[in-house]
Image (cartoon, rainbow, N blue to C red; front, side):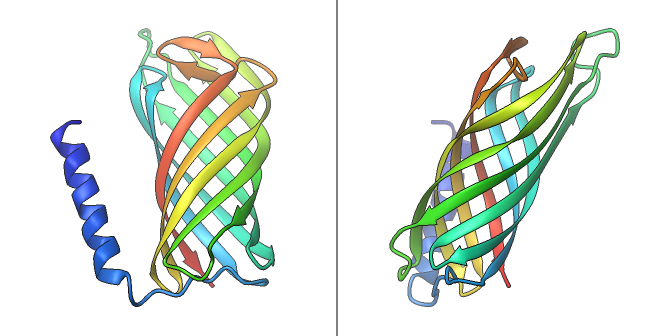
Length: 180
């Protein structure tokens, strides 16, 4: 593990320890959440890639959230000859939250959507779907740090991993969720 990973883990541990007594999760029916995530993909189009997504969610029942997600990534001039890598993904996820009376709230879910990928001479789109799991660390009643792992399958080869176009992808993300 390199020094940046150790520093990130140390920062996360200090944030969790200083907020342990003050946070009460907002996962009840009717609560809404806005989210921003940064995805770290260690097998991205040209190696390590960082992309961002935004979402809006609504708790349809206590502990059960339905979210809409928009994800976009662009890397310019990555394959020579001024080729770009671009992806747009629109999707939805259903997430079930456990242990909702604590500061650390684990969740599991499933997501589905549509992804369009353009890379060098490849231009493909298709449905994507798959499981997700995560852990929310509530920093306050209405703010949570979110650590997430998503595995996706696709109806076509729409994921680019180290210059290879594939139909599966594993991604991790870290982000913030704000509850309204």
